[in-house]
Image 1 (cartoon, rainbow, N blue to C red):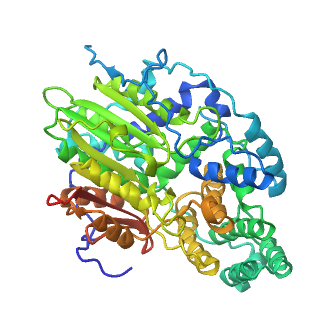
Image 2: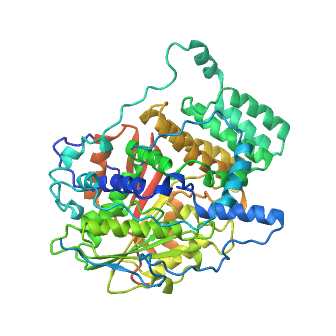
Image 3: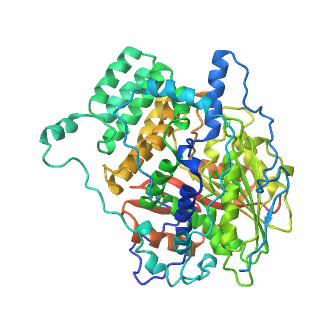
Length: 576
């Protein structure tokens, strides 16, 4: 990575430095609540699947079969979802201020053939379209209460230090994990020698070239050679080769869209995926540090506000907001009214808004526990079709727009002449927020030419597999599941899908900077107090090879010098 304009001091932080509260334990407990709250969560798939991709894949098959598309049309706008389950009203419900297991991990199946999973899971995808029943969330759980609260209840959210933060550093959710040994054990000399002569990158690139040239014979020959030494339980390079080989095979056979859709209709219970996600966010700082950056930036903006409206593009399960809720609950004089507009893509099936609706109910219950007045509004449609009127802007509220890593799923100008991606940025400009927090996946694997895209994707994902190799033991089942269901799924989309079916379209932070500026935003300088806190937490709690840097007013996160994520704050130009 090039030199940064304002690099963070990388010298070890003082051990006596007091670190402010970030209330990230609330995220873990929010996940625990999800694991406990619903009986059918155990059987619910599509945990982190991007639903725009699923709809694109379904359209692909409907068009191929000559059937009429039964999914919601482009202009479909479902009604605002009221949190109250007894009412179909479009009004938002306000929560009044009050006065006063583990999941058993499925073992990985023995190298199932992908076409078998495709046939089985696609049938399941059709049969699973049924109305889901809402199960009342568990309330007043003693264990949950104890884990949830910062003991001294110090309002560190607004910048003050939390005296008890030092003790929380020793909890399992923030402990620096044992660094895994690299490579094979010494006893296996034969395999070690074989590994040394295998040039994985060359083999994979040759196979990709064969796929690009539609040379299926050569491609399958190379795949057989790659698969001979690339088990999904091997080291980082072998696992990387395994999932890229799967994607190349799908491209060669033309089954990419169906296999990608199979990830969302698979038999892995949502509760199991949630547990794997928790393992990932514990071992890697990206999610936690993103939350700290975004939430502390928001906290400083809303310090004096009595009403706050957060518009979250890509709310998914709302994992970011427990920290905000805990923070504002401690405001002297009482917490402000919090209104969240949760925006996401429609899900496939009869209830396109189900996931966003359930997120609102969970956040409502969370606000009740902390006596935070709460309103929730769900918008479920294509983001570039949302109008200003849909958002019900109240200019008396402190207005914040938040978008963390999901704009990469909105098509760009290479897919549509009128770029939906730019249309969303123009909408945010019209919203005229007091603060726009923007997190992006930093990637260069969005090239139109397949060979170029393959090389960049291989380089990018090698960092993710190497990162997990260094932080989570190889035999860990959660790691295996996360690699297969998240990295394997994304690689399948990048390599084996094209056109509207290819939804993984990241850009570099410098390209996003140009987009944002063109849309009429001005970038805000990074808050160095927040940066100092994040640097201290990464240095004290995580592997030494995690990258934290800054460049052009972006906070950069990555692994061994490669930037994987970037975050920055913006506001509209005042003279426009």
